[in-house]
Image (cartoon, helix red, strand yellow):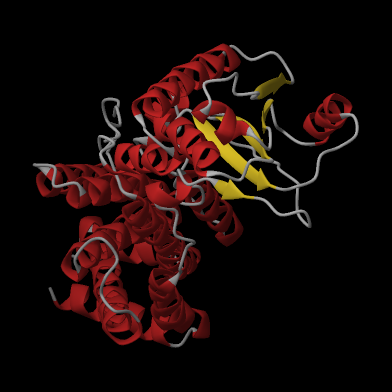
Length: 416
């Protein structure tokens, strides 16, 4: 017992003398807490489904989202009727409507429309003539024209929607005694429009997060990326001590004394625990000082994640020190594991989900389980804490057993 305490005291002194250790202890954990202050552009459903108003100074329309058919409404009518038809199309949620209200009209509209669609990502242009509303009221042909660009099966659906809406507007016009009553009928129809609810189908293993919760997950992921670096860095300093002690034949002296090799390993593990506790404490202080505490999960939850990740990575680096007799090999292995697990877990690209065999491999990274558990907590899933506890203990047991076995093998080789 006395030998164990002496080893622990000696190792702690060596760590505290290293300036780089203080960086991993204080600066990096504090930097991680700043990730919770990142702000993102709000993208509400209401904003995403609104009609985009274009001006003559900015007619460029380029959109990388092909989930909706991009449509330009060239509106010479600028009337209540043209607005009503655009709102009806927008209500379906299948089209992204760009409205251009103007009194101008190109000399050769068909050529202009073709060139415009080639220069932009538009598929369709709907032209509203100046007398569009009066034609509807008079029971004449509306004069509306649909100009098609590239082939798209959704264009036929768009035409069908336009015809249905025009038929409805014709009915309103026939039932109205005058223009004012017709306009009032259109306004009443808009007010009484059935509220549309969007239902998202979530695949197994995925979670239905709001935009705000997605932003929280992003911040947690970036914080984890920095924290895992801090844990690996502090673990490497501990591993460096192990390698130096190997060169000084410390394991040989331990075997010749009454101290067990297992005690030597336990000392290293305990030091890793102490370092993790201190780093977790710094993170907790940073959260209270530099953030508002609103990042999707409670401070206690993130403290739990920080402590578990710290134990896993510090213990992993200790194992690297027991495996290798060279500091550079330990650096390569530790930082290699850190980079690979960060990439696989998705902390650099939290919005992207890996599928197939590589997605299954990502489940073997502790960072991935932090993100998954965070999403479970945000969506109120049951068993989140138990699942994470079991996974974390599993990681630690595997690493600890490997470290113990390898240290015994190394100890036997050093005595020969």
